[in-house]
Length: 317
Ligand SMILES: [Mn+2]
Image (cartoon, rainbow, N blue to C red):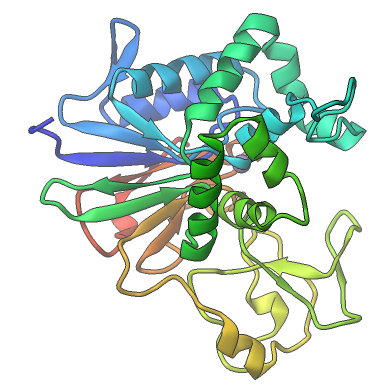
């Protein structure tokens, strides 16, 4: 694609196909022979195509159609990963699956279970298996940018690559290791697909807005906490938390944030809320603005710039 001018990165869609078609249209894509395309640009989907929304099969048809026609790339979200584990039996077990079929897990996957059955479900799971957990893209003049569902972390990615090589892809044996809490792959997949956590000091915990107790926070992995910061200041989510314990300086010292000289990185996952999207740092942006919770679908138009520009977000409201 010599005429390739840039990439449009798109955050979590969660079955909201009408919003996806509106966003693609707004970005200048149009449907030709059933595939959305643009004469000079292509898309990078940041994962979480399924669960929650009303038109999951249509979202998959659009995204997969674009990927298979070479008009888009896509990375896996935690919802696709969870779906794979939910539908993969534990070896030598008749009824159990790698992701337990608890009420909570069934509820989280319910919209997909209602809308995709049998052949189409199996076919979608096969497509999820082909999705990489991250990708690096080359811009018009060789500049790079990165895409991952939740967190770019070199050490975790090394472990995932090693396991993929060992098992030969995202197959049942890979998923079994990834769902085994005592295997190093478990934590690596958690970081890349669900975000990096920081445990609170012993004996501390906080309650979220639903009353669930937590002993770790989901961190702002793209920056180091400022000196004297409290745990509640270093959390990456839309709802504030109440945890005014100070982060000890030796804990701060151990935190390695996303490098300031690395390519820009785009993620989804964090259910952000804002009237207008904005970057998290000059190098990192989250494009998940909660389309499945009365928010909007969000994209970023990347043309090779190495610092994320707040004027280049495009969204559906
Ligand atoms: Mn999501």
